[in-house]
Amino acid sequence: MSWPLVAIKDVARVVTGKTPSTVASDNFDGEIPFVTPSELGVEVYVTTAPRTLSAKGAAEIRLVPENAVMVCCIGSLGKLAIAGAVVATNQQINSVIFDEQKVDAKYGFYALQLLKPKMESMSTSTTIAIINKSNFEAIQIPLPPLAEQKRIAAILDEADAICRKRQQAIQLADDFLRTVFLNMFGDPVTNPMGWEVKPLSLGLKSITAGWSANGESLPCDAGEMGVLKISAVTSGVFKPQENKRVSREDIPKGKPLVFPKRGDLLFSRANTRELVAATCLVQSDFDNIFLPDKLWRVETSQDQILPEFLNYLLWHPKFKEKLTSQATGSSGSMLNISKGKFEEIDAIFPCIESQKKFKSIYWSVQAIREKVSSSRLKVGDLFEVLTQKLFSTGL
Image (tube, rainbow, N blue to C red; front, side):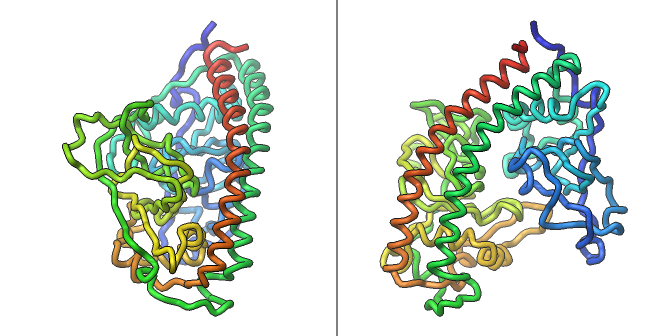
C-alpha cells in the first residue's frame, strides 16, 4: 500500500525566521540560541548556537518551540534539524511546527529530509538558491497513521545511528588534521611561532575562475557534462555529486573550462556570510564536471606555499574572519571576495620543509578517511533505500 500525501501547511504551522536589529547590541548575547544554516545538518537536535539573543532581541521575532523541524530554504536548501529547545532562527530557515495529533516530530524530520531534491528543483534563483514560504509549505509529504509514523521513525533512528558512527570517525580525522596544523604552525593570525608574514600573492601562481553555465536541477550522469554548485566546496570536502547537468550543445565551442584535478585547491569566492571563503582539496581527477564563476582554482608556488597548508590556513576561524571582513555585500545577501583582496591579505609563510611534513600527514589521513567514507557510502545508500521504502509502502 502507499500512504496518502498531504501538504505541509495542512498538518503544520510554518514560521520563517528573522534577525533582530543588529544596530541594537543589547538584542544579542543572551540565553536564547540563534540558529543559522551552519548549525543545521550536523546533529538531529540543535540546543545551542554560537550566537544568542537576549530577551529583548527575542521579543522582536517569533521563537521556535521545541520539536519544531528547522529547514534551510535560502542557500543550502534542505539542510535541517529539530529544535531541541526553544530557539530563534534567521531568515534563511523555515521552521515546521507539526500538529502533534497528526504528525510525530521525528517522523516529520525524516519526511522533510526527503525533500532536498524537490526543493532544489523548485528554486527560483540562479545566484543563491531560494524557495519561498508559500511554495515550501505546499510541498506534500506521506502521512501514514500516527502509530506507523512512530514505527518508521524508530527504524530510521537505528539506521541513522550506524551512519553517524561512520561520520564520527571521519570527523575525528578532520579534527586530527586541524590539531596537527595548530601544533606545527600555531595561530596563523597572532603568529606565536614568528613565521615570515607576506602578502598571500607572493605564494600564489595563478587563480582561475570557472564559467557560469545554466545547468539543469539534476546532476550529470556518466558521459554527461555538469557545472559544480558552490555546495560542492562549502563543507570542506569536495562533493562532485553537487553539480547541475549542462548540455554539451550549450557550451560555446572552444570555451576553456576548468576541470578539478587531484590536489587542486578550490575556493568559494561568493556565498552567504557563513559559507563564503570555503575551500577544499580535490581527491581525484574529473573530466566531465567544471567550475562555475563563483569557484576559483587556486594554484600555489610550490616553493612558497603548498595547497595542503593553504587549505587549512583558509579554514582557520581567525584567518577566515580576517579574510571575509574584506568581502563586499551586506550580511543579508551574498558576499563576494575579490581577487585583489584575496591576494593582498597578509599570511604566514612557514618553512617549506614543515609544510611538506604536513602534506605527508594530510594525504596519509586522507587514505584512511577514504576507506571509512567508502564504507559509510554503502551504509548511506542502504539508509536512503530504507527511507524511500518506508515512506512509500512501509515494511
